[in-house]
Length: 86
Image (cartoon, rainbow, N blue to C red; front, side, top):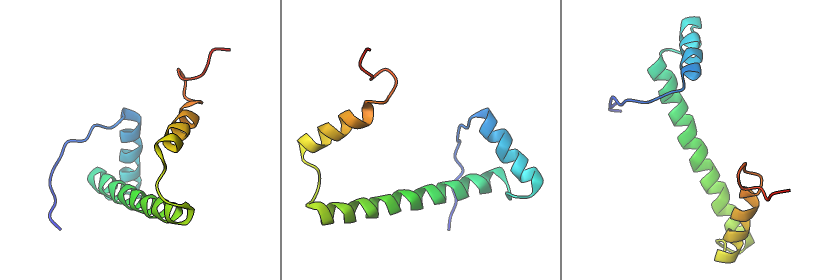
């Protein structure tokens, strides 16, 4: 598979941890670690997409606009800045 060099910005603490893993021999290189992490994330997204598609098939299809608005409201209810004033 062909590879392409890109620039990725990481949090300094994350980069220190990755470099520590490389030094300890638990990761081949920073690039290798990032490539593996991206691969895992892509598989995860695909898996969740398949799971969601199956759940939608079993429950009657995609959410209606009203259902989506309700879900968005519920999911954002606990987000700081979105909580109602006490």
